[in-house]
Length: 256
Image (tube, rainbow, N blue to C red; front, top):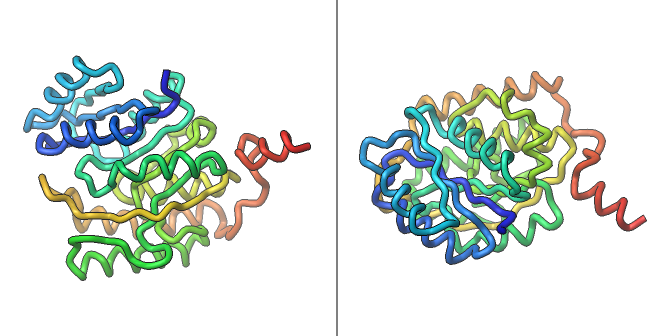
């Protein structure tokens, strides 16, 4: 049985769902896929059901309606925790996150509790974005690092791999954000709980099929959430102690 799950939220992704699941299964033969569909009007959920019927590594979680990216991921994480998965990925359905990179994440997760894909470490690797959107994303990353002190180059990215211990410890029902701020909150809380973060370089390519979910409200939510997170932690700039369930603590215990 596989110990890794790739969670892929979908809403109106009929052009991509077949190809993205096939690409994940090909590039990560050690992983299962969970499609979390928010009752897509275009029939994405039905297509996912057809795929699952013919492939035991594909699973589908149907939700009643569109509640946002963060709620979809939290539902997927809860589904994973109810089962045997030790590593839980999150990635987009539109190929902006390339499944070819999945093995790099899995390798990095041997020495980290949360692995983040970064577009900005050692240069900028973004394809087919207009300049205004690239600048918005790049400076938003700088803004988040400035306010929170989080030691990562791309805190707003959504291509990640969590160890099970992180998701169990974070008390997912307490995660309040939903849009792109969800990505910031999850990474920040992981770090503040004393877990180890690592980054792997990725190339981000804007979607070729379907419609982007980005909006001005999503950006505003993310900018305001950063201050809420900092205030919540009293503007602490470091997490303090290593979490006892961190891979770091476990490695030290084994070495001794």
